[in-house]
Image (cartoon, rainbow, N blue to C red; front, side, top):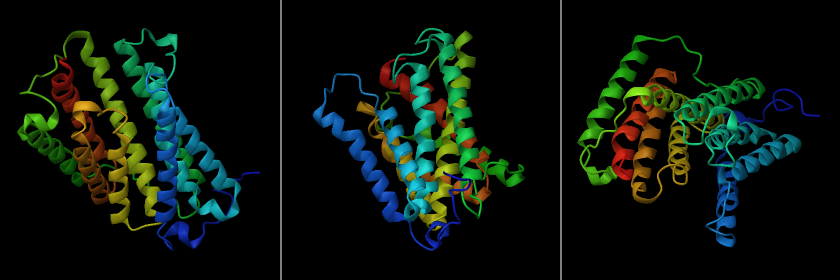
Length: 296
């Protein structure tokens, strides 16, 4: 029977005695196989719920690390990856991209559905983060979520938002997959649901990557290595999610943003500044980049 806090006290490797990089690479290699092999041997035009398949894979890995005593030190890391998968898969399902969309929140393309899906993603991420915190062995993981706001946090958050917008608008248009700055018309009834959808999704991702994943990596590696790895994983996670086709050039930028937000989180000891900048970044992508890519 699985007991609280991953069954036993953590091994030395689980709290900094080992690098944990072998386990990390094995989990990622397995995820790559689960994601890519069905595409090689399957019908590329058929419905293929990649996100749910990955989520089930991470759930199986988490269960295995809990069941096998010698693997229990890896359980927090495995659960961190499950925390990446489940909220996102639920978000896609509610939007209708990972299975038939439920009919209790309007049509598949409705703006209300976007807002509802974003809120659900954020709530699930928070629940998963709470489970990660209370089930992880001592010392408790540093999620940097429940922190009293400080002037440093405010300064870094506001400064980061301004800096992001300055750099974003200064970058060459082709690099961002757009021509000029075709701003998206956020007016009327569209503004509020789109604002809710983007803000809640950004908050969920910060909880997942800079909160749970980075704190799981920090238990086995240096903080610098944890920041580096979570940034790379953050960028790779966007390849098949949002930035396919003409936006493929975005991936290095997303990795760099993951590193920046990781540094901000470590420096201020809080997720709040990164959340603020991430929200601005998502609005920038919606208003400037997406409209340029798809003619919105």
